[in-house]
Every structure is written in structure tokens, then in C-alpha cells.
Length: 114
Image 1 (spheres, rainbow, N blue to C red):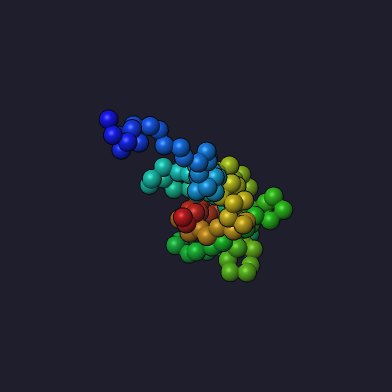
Image 2 (cartoon, rainbow, N blue to C red; image 1 turned 90 degrees about the vertical axis):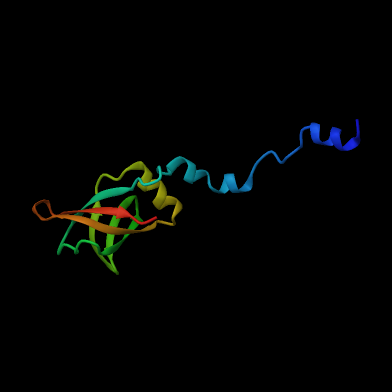
């Protein structure tokens, strides 16, 4: 047996942890299956934004505010835990699209842009 055969047969010693895996840990906990969307429902204070409009979600003092440019137009009352994790790891901001309007309830359905 040659040395090259023995080198191939023994186990290689690799680092005990992977830096990329450590950095992406929050993605492993809060990630969605391919094709699955993360959405929420927000109550609107004033005029309803049109369907397809881009808005901003902002985590502010434990509440999630909906902003249209620099104006606060609504709030997410009962957010999903995945949405809270995304906002905490995304520096408190996320871009969303208006999927549907519910004028009778003064609510809009939002989808998070990923």
C-alpha cells in the first residue's frame, strides 16, 4: 500500500463550526419553504393604499407600524413570530406589497418581499 492510498482512507479533520452556518442561523429558524409567502394583515388609519403598492414595515417599540414613504398609515396588531424574527434580524425594517384591500374592516393584506 502506498502513502496516497492511506491518505485517502483516513478521515479529514475539518473545522468544528462553519462561519456561514453561524451567520445564517436565524434564517434556518425562520425560513419558509420554496414558494411559500410570509404575509400579515394590518389595520389602516386613513386612506387605503392601492393594491400592488410597496410599503414599509417598521418595528418600533415592540409594535409593527406600516409606513407609506414617511407617513405612518397603519399597524399590524397580531404579527406572526416569523415576521417578528425577520424584522429583528432585518434592522427593524421590511418592504411589503399590498395584496388585497378590506375596506369594510379598514384592513389590508400585506406580503413581505424577500
